[in-house]
Amino acid sequence: MKQLFPIRHVMGYVFSLVLSVVALAVIVWDMSFTTGLTILIICAAIQAAVQLFLFMHIDEDKTTKTANYTNILYALFVALVTLFGTLFTMIWGYL
Image (cartoon, rainbow, N blue to C red; front, side):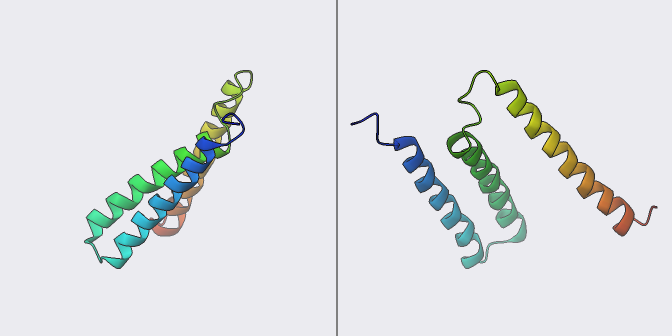
């Protein structure tokens, strides 16, 4: 029975809820900008790791492990190019 209970998933869900409460606490407690932003960025990074490793099973299949990490790096590259391309053209005024 112990093998049938998804303890990792339950703990990941609880940890996600705790991280969400911490993010809400930043808003409720009206922290300074730098402190609040630092806490939110750290919580977002931890939340992304929890989602990838516990719920999306990024590390379970050994045969597609390289492909999974390559896809994540490619998605990160596309997101950064889109973000900085938008900043480059719209805010900094270069065409």
